[in-house]
Image 1 (spheres, one colour):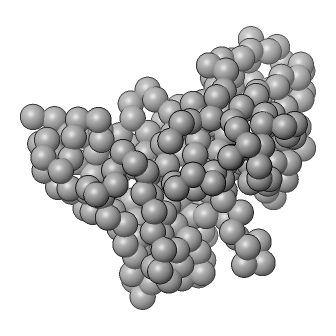
Image 2 (cartoon, each protein chain N blue to C red):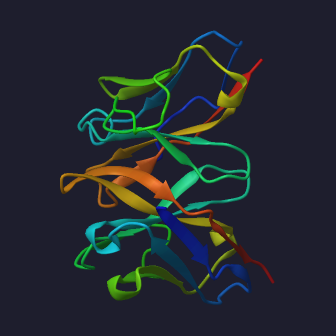
Length: 123
Length: 111
């Protein structure tokens, strides 16, 4: 079945780094844009970053620009988020999500979500 | 980038209808038909309920409907059921540099 599984979360000190991974299955991963979306404890959803199907385009929320890097390996059906210079305010559950397509047209909606991985930034 | 504006909470009794609003600007909700809605139960991942303002993915009950007027999109749930109690988020394409934005979320309580 169509599935996304995140991994790599954990406890890290302020200023540290962490690399999240998202393993995709059940669909042609290389056809789809992918995004990372986070949710701080008790808070709402915040879009973090997206990457195009061939990695040609990436974009980031202002809050993480210059510190986070999104990447993908279509041969391994995997999405990544390299997070550097982490801050307490980066503490959140991080979800990877597939961006919807309709006959090749991007719909700017997220139709498949992983279960999330928790990142805690604390000394 | 500013989040879209949603009411913090709404409530309704079983069988009733409720509407959740999502207000943006002409740079996002008002300018494009790329509004989507998500349902999130506690401890679970969000689930896509509506895309392109008013389209339902396969498997989403037709009790859920979406619409838009000007800079405000709306999610209506008719025939409320206990299992509809959840947090709901809107999202939209935005012409700002980030291109994607969420609303702050609305907690739906079924009385």
